[in-house]
Amino acid sequence: MPDRPIYLDYHATTPVDERVLAAMLPYFTENFGNPASISHIYGWEAEAAVKQAREILADAINATPEEIVFTSGATEANNLAIKGVAEAYFQKGQHIITVATEHHAVLDPCKYLKSLGFEITILSVQKDGLIDLTELEKAFRSDTILVSVMAANNEIGVLQPLAEIGSRCRDAGIIFHTDAAQAIGKIPLDVQTMKVDLMSLTAHKVCGPKGIGALYVRRRNPRVQLASQQHGGGHERGMRSGTLYTPQIVGFRKAVEIALQEQATETQRLTQLRQRLWEQIKQLKGIHLNGHSTQRLPGNLNISIEGVDGSALLLGLQSVMAISSGSACSSAMTAPSHVLTALGNSEQLAYASLRFGIGRFNTVEEIDRVAAHVVSTIQSLRKQATFV
Image (tube, rainbow, N blue to C red):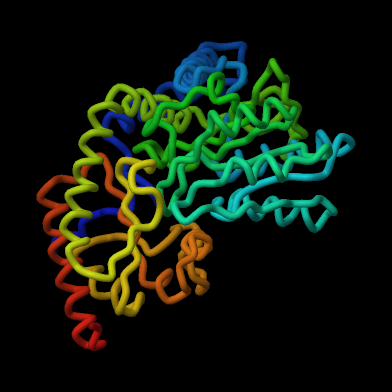
């Protein structure tokens, strides 16, 4: 069997860490009880596992266990946060603020609410992908009920200033939600110092299983109310009905535990790998870095390349590496990345872009091999296109 391509798409998803899988396995076969079954040991075992996971996730973001609501992933968490606030605070106001570079799991619920009569302000970003805090404050209105700004961008890796955003929202009495799907376990998160009221999380971006996520919902100072978007049993404090998927929850807990334990060393290692890759590729002219040069995820490198066709570029790389030109969640779409065009890139440059997502199991040898192949492929395509 030929060698598989080097995986550099860690922002799309990650392999499950063997330590995570080992923690999950008993809950499929031995400790398989329903955590809502409180009259026998099988249910007690599952309930205890869920409780422990809730505590670990809460500690990871400086919350309380009661503030963690389990979901099927960050997309559901985003929908619950945005639609839940809209319905619960409808009488207070119908204005929501978000950002042009958000994931579609935030933009699409906002678009849906707009069809119901809500007003949505979509902030532009600066050339480096960061929002302008002055523009954010200018967008505040007396009827603004929610601001949603992602912690770490899934395409360009940019880290938004959550503490500064949260402080401004708190002073204005506006609920602050952040999609932290790409951030959990990779950067420090603290809902108290950052004044975050709602935070969406997922496991599969941090070497955990797919199909499990969570929403942090603040209980005090202020207490945030949400209208449930899924009914039938009143699970998760009535916010999200459905039998809890214990094996996935255990996997989520273990993945976050490992990520936090290794965060400092992994941040340093991934940053070095990213810089090693960038230093080799940027020697070519006509290579543009997308997003802030340092205020970004350690393992993210997103570049646009002049003088090449985007489809031909990906085709020329796919035998050696598995990478993406944009968000995996919208990779079937023919339009250029909305994130890259929001930075001011032309459609042509947006199409001719590469998103490198470097992760836990990548090595220096892999990075060097990838860099060499990227450079040679670009040179070959440019020669065919007579790029000067």
